Image 1 (cartoon, rainbow, N blue to C red):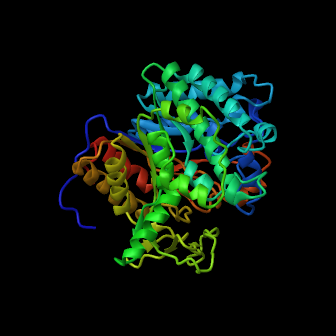
Image 2: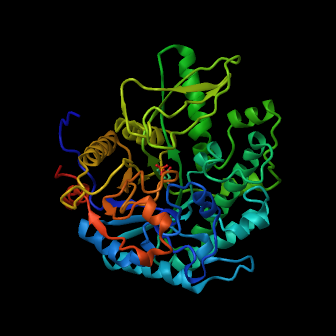
Length: 484
Ligand code: BG6
């Protein structure tokens, strides 16, 4: 990477990191928490660790926040676990769950770290799934609204930045992988009902946030993977546009404009899909005005046109961290994804493409003109301690440096970017690969095998070891992005 000059970050820029409850907290049976759908999903992924212990953040939050403060954080993005807050169908609020998050928020504020809180990051309580048939039944909207209001009521005096549903687009695109498709017998059609119900849930949360949280701001969190056309053939441009539409754009349009696009309505008509829109739904969505966009962006993809007679291919993600084990999707008549010879990949075949972050910020700014907070970006890798007991991660430092440089360029391009919160602070469980795919600035000294075999976290030390990237990031933060 060639750096022409030092990027400049605005005063008050949020420097932090990001996590999610089910991937960090552990303590899944503690203090009244009941199971979440993602617990059951993660338990199927052995030999990779299930989330019973995870990074044991529930029992280490004070130590973790002190480390964030040492690093110089001014923000921290995390999610609330719905089954910790409302563990049963009687809707009774679990005081122990509220206490945990109150303590975490107070601890952050004591160090002047601004909390950025996600309402939902894949951990629907099992009781909700049973009652509402996952996301399929509209009764989910009432449950979600009630849960959101409980969160705003208890934490809204101190939490002013809220995120509604993490990566709704990815949940619909990869329903099986993230456990969302349960209960569906025709995913191709029913995913649009789920999607609509999620939109109603988000809309209710946005409206309630504005009504209940003084000065509260709330936004969506799309998983952004920008699509470059494979060639300058005109039909590859259309293929890339189709891929972008079906993996991210239609969600962004709906979230920001509060209505469904003609593109999507025509698609539903052509495929005989009824997403279950009822009178009043579109008015509700239109009323929910988001304040900013949370941006999750790790990589790019490359797209081309796929003719109508092409053979369908599902997207088979690389689930074992051995390069070359990914199969790109082909959607006949719409698009195919393909590899990009101009970028390297990590062990999970994810493109290492810092420019995609600048591209994404430019793209979102040009389309929607809303402030943005980077809520995820990061480098997953196989890692272990070195002989000196430390963890040296020059690849992650390079990744962060180059991505942050691109954020600086996007700001110079005119984008309004409020903060950078990479994934993740400590190592936490990857969605499919547990601790085998680590992202943290701080190493958690436990392997998948140890986590799976331990009865509970008291059997493990769960030591935190600052990686080289922690020290590098700390210097960068303390110079507001000037000390590379
Ligand atoms: C994001 C999710 O899409 O990607 C996180 O919001 C996830 O929950 C992250 O952990 C990285 O993906 P993975 O599969 O490497 O854990």
